[in-house]
Amino acid sequence: GPLQECELRNLAELGMGNGGSVMKVEHVPSGVIMAKKIVLIDAKPSVRKQILRELHIMHSCSSPYIVSSFGAFISEPNICICMEFMDKGSFDSIYKSIGRYKSNAQRTSGVEESTEGPIPICIVRQAVKRVLGGLVYLYEAMGVLHRDIKPSNILLNSEGQVKLCDFGVSGELENSVAKTFVGTSVYMSPERIQGSDYSIKSDVWSLGITLIELAHGCFPFSDTEVDESPSDSAAPSATLSLTRRSQRKSKGVSVHGGVGTLSILELMHHIVREPPPVLITPSIPHSKDFAGEAAQFVDYCLRKDPNERPSPRELLGMSWMDDEGRDEEMDLRKWAVTL
Ligand code: ADP
Ligand code: MG
Image (cartoon, rainbow, N blue to C red; front, side, top):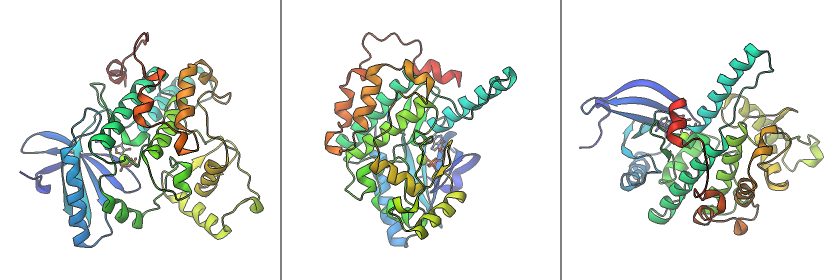
């Protein structure tokens, strides 16, 4: 039968995002552990019902690269979506905790501490391959775009499975959440920032940024120098200061830099105007050991013209995605159990 709220027992909070929070819950009658996403919705009852209908598409998703869904229900004023619980969490919390572990070790050895740490490039490669599998499935079998590729929407479990969550099955859900929150993301492609139609190529851009973030252990634009001169900024200063103010309280839009902090608007300008970030860069010393084919893969993902950017299926055909003849010391499952 359909999921009932009264049958769920809260176990722990898994995280908070811009749109709500995620709880680890137990479905008491079956003993199944689930992740319950609670989204605050600003919508009329008729729209809420429409959202539930759209979310139903998630039920028909069946792929090893997509989190499975147990159902959704309305719990005024929220919509709750129950999905497969992934016990190793999302890739953002994984790389951030690798960093914390490292910084403890560094503290005892007296070396300067860092707050975040990279994921081994061979693991990034294998995870990216699964993400592409998920994108191909969503696009080709379900006819949907993901629309929110970022480290926190890529999940891992201790079996070494990598799965996507929070994909755009519900246009109405996206509309209703956008009204209550700043509907903007630092993983947005240049064409999307400029207001063009969203396409599968926009998901590929977000994957490229995500890939660099995981391999570097920090968000790629974080050491960008910003030109603060007002004449250089196309944005009205009122908008800019508004952005700065809201950025302080809301998680997920603030970008820390060595030089200063980029406001979300400054970052958007930067993404549109400047060359895309690269995988191998002097500012990340360990990146010099990455293979040329990895760097090339990222360059393709981050081509600013979406027409020159490959599709997920085309990316799966690139040499870096070929498992053949690779002597990787670790697979996803072995790595997952070390976390
Ligand atoms: P965001 O993706 O912007 O961080 P969300 O509200 O979507 O915000 O998710 C909050 C956190 O909950 C995520 O960062 C992730 O660590 C965790 N999470 C989400 N879904 C699951 C899941 N199915 N299993 C385990 N953890 C999850
Ligand atoms: Mg999410």
